[in-house]
Length: 116
Image (cartoon, rainbow, N blue to C red):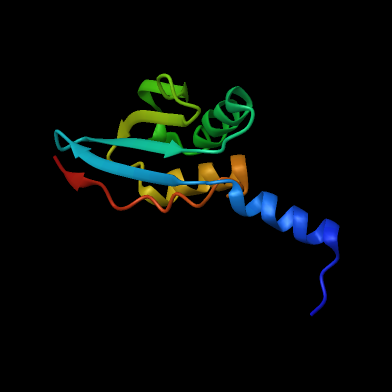
């Protein structure tokens, strides 16, 4: 396979970008789930946050409380955090992420919430 110089430079630039995405799910008090998603390399954090909330609203059991979505402290990372009923499962959260980002910043693959 033969690569041109512009192709090699583009690949090198992409390789230097570090993208890390994690999701933590916690089963709180028997009736709610808390989800916390951290993502690096996210561009347009306000736009992505808006998409996340819009997509999550499709699932009635995912009516969110104790919400936050934005820049995580003094970092360039994004944090998306909320509490929803225990019926709001990891698949719904994953789907909201996929629809908002197409996994451009990584797949979150939220685990089933664990007891706290």
